[in-house]
Image 1: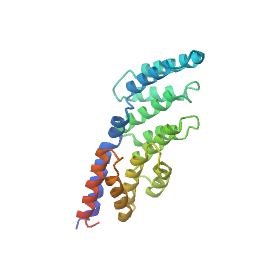
Image 2: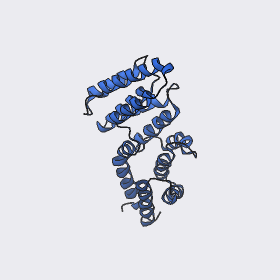
Image 3: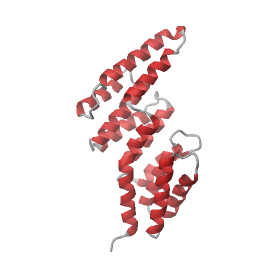
Length: 222
């Protein structure tokens, strides 16, 4: 006899597989061209005495756009982005973090999840990278491992990201709900998804997904 909870878990897994990176890029605008353009605009407002920094930021942004000129998720463009980020003169820059995140997304598209995890972890573990990007690296690394990684360890890694005020809090909570289901803790999962479905600050698509999961859990007898 088929376990209804196992069937539900598979449905949730497939839904998250389809949406996890696509939803992030759509919501936060980390399309490479858009981010590079924003960087150009932002650096244009730097005062005159920051002229050298402005020139450096513009150079990095131009280099990043040149490196990422191919829109296809090819192995060559992925490797080029990773190489750009690993240059000693680039490693501490925002552009390097963006390049690694884009390369990680490409690796996911190519079904090379281990490589994606390594790329996201590079962002998460770089102490010179802005904290918001490090936290994003943690989140995307965990999301890439949701289906097969150590659920307890992944949940623990997400914990700091779920604190109030953290930039990726709701996405981290959603991932924790899925991991709770993987660990057989239906009650914790229901509480997480219930909170997400009732919080007005949660993006509408995520809230609707949480509601659907709750209905699924009830239908499965969870």
